[in-house]
Image (cartoon, rainbow, N blue to C red; front, side):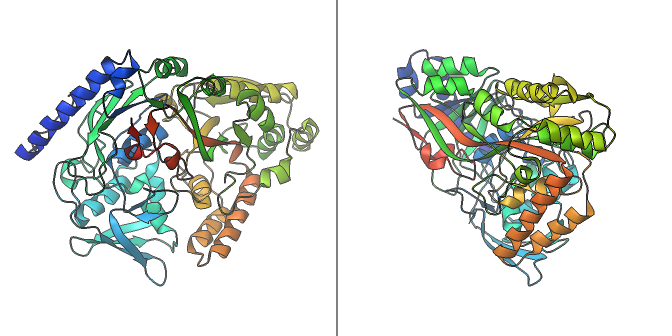
Length: 527
């Protein structure tokens, strides 16, 4: 295995790894010989394909879906969504809030071990949270902990979170990858580990091998405290082109694909014998972000004109063939509190007249030259067509002259808001609640560095977090959506489903397609 082991490994770890290496070799051999579908059928190892990329495996600086998919298999938090879209305790036995909602005391599950066999205690939990806040990685995951003042322990199985302000939804935060627990003795406090370094989590798998941009090999964690995976391992192959991945699926070289085919490819696969297209609840969104202090996007009139011209329906029909639907709020339909303020303020379809009027009233000379950034593979090959459609709508109005630029995710993700004035992003839920689609974007110092910081919004965020009834919280969520639609730090434009494609011998996929947006590979099996 191409891993850099430290001198701290124990004899027990070496023994376990030897066994895992054997499994990984078998898995790799079965993949290598998968020119015939019978080769992969003979193994209980599931081979998945994806066009996602992995930025960081270390959860202290992981905030993209490709990295999340990997981390979900090897790390866990105190809460999570292991069996559906309902929040459940995972590494905790439950958490209780103080009367003012500023202190949360959590009991920990006993007899939990890391993949190397060492026990998990409150010291590991505290260290993991402190570490995320210490590193403050450029991917921005630490922003989820913006309300955390400090973490303390009360014995080996009790952790206490002290918040800066009241927050009734703190258990949701504990479910996010910002709260994934790592082994204190194995992770440096002030920097992230390399992707090819060993990782120590409490999840159902461990990462046996990681080849950047090529393959990740997972084997069942022999020290896992919960139910064992329904398969004997998992391989994720990384593809730069969905067309290559489609051919691999059709030839039986891989068993399934989770993210992403183009709409045309999905239509073709749906008609292919032996292939099943699975579709579930859709809370993934796409949106355009503005750095509100970068010209010309620092002018609200420019942002409003773009909002009036956003071709949502054309994108949904021409680019995505109806597999996505127009979105008029950052909170997708189906989640509590979702509303349509962008439709109310800017209309359901583009209006050149209204866009021209708002620019004229602000004294803006047209056409306005702007640059829009997008990323080619991270969000699927259809992104190029998506932004061509936006360019077409803006240019056709005569009010803008659009230049499109793109960069691959590794460069793109580190430049958000710093180099780019307007740029494409997508969102999957940290947790399936409207709070995650508002606070994450509208708090000061948000992860995408767009310079938005509004005192009224800050007060609304505090009010939503402190709400003691669901009705009161929903009312504030709606107010936040309306204010954001008026101020336009972002423009949402589509909402999509959770889609996976597999060969017909893979079972369990439909059971994991829900609003939590978890691909629970451990629940899948192969016949």
